[in-house]
Image (cartoon, rainbow, N blue to C red; front, side, top):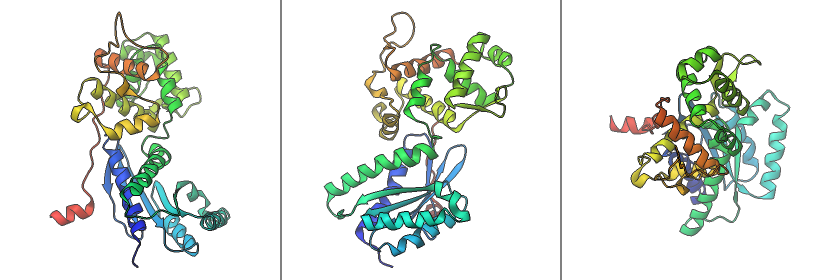
Length: 324
C-alpha cells in the first residue's frame, strides 16, 4: 500500500532520532528488520533491546485497532512506538482501543507502548516545518522513550542527588568497583578502595537510596549496579572525555549534550580549564554540574575507576547482507 510523504518522513525521523542520539556513545544502534512494522531498530548496551513502531497518518481511526494489535502481539521487545496524527477522533478511538485491552491478557503489554502525537496540519515538503516537527519529536522521543530504555529511567533528580555527595570521586569509584567485582561486604569493599569504612557505608547507602545500586535484601549487603547506575557511570566516563578534550571533534558531541541537557547537566558551560580539584578549586557548590565534574575529575586523578568505553553503532542486518 502506498504511503504518504508525511508517513514516510515521520517513520524515517523516528529512526534518525534514535540513531543520532546513539552518537552520544551511551548506547549502540542498529536498524532492524521491519517485518510488519513501519520502522524497527535494536538499541544496545550490555543488553540488546528492540524498538518497533507504526505511523498513523492517512488511514482513519478504524486502522488503530489493527496497528495496536500488531504492536502488542510482538514478543521480546522493549518498546512499541506509535506516531499518529493529532485529531480528537483519533485520540478518542485510541483511548477506546487501549481501554479494551485492559480487560485482556494483553494488558501488561500496554506499558511498552509509547505514543507521540503530531499536529494534524503537518505537510511534508516544507523544510522549515519538517525541522520543527523533527525537533519536537526528538525532544519527546529522547525524554519519554530513550531515557527509559537506554538509561534505566535516569532523571535530573537522580543526577543532582548523586552529584551532591561531599566525598569527591567516591560515588563514581564505588559504582565502578561494584560493576567490575561485585560487593562482598562493606569492609572488603572499603579495603579494596582504600577508603574509610564509615564513608563507604554512607555512600553505598546513598547510591542504594538513589536507585543506582540494588540488593535482594532490604538490609543491603550483596549489591549490584542497576541500569540507571550503569548509565550514570557511562555519563561520567563521557564527561571524563570532555575534561580530557576527547569527547569528539572540537571536544563536542551534540547527541551527548542533548541527553545531558535533559538531565540538567550543562557541562559545556564549564570550561575544561576550570580548576576542579585541590586548593583554590573553582567549584560552585550550588551547581550540580560543577559538582559532578569534580567527582569525575577526582575519580580520574585517583585512578580508581575502570572507565567504560563508548558504545558504537553496528551496521544493520540488511547492510551486512548487501555488502557480502
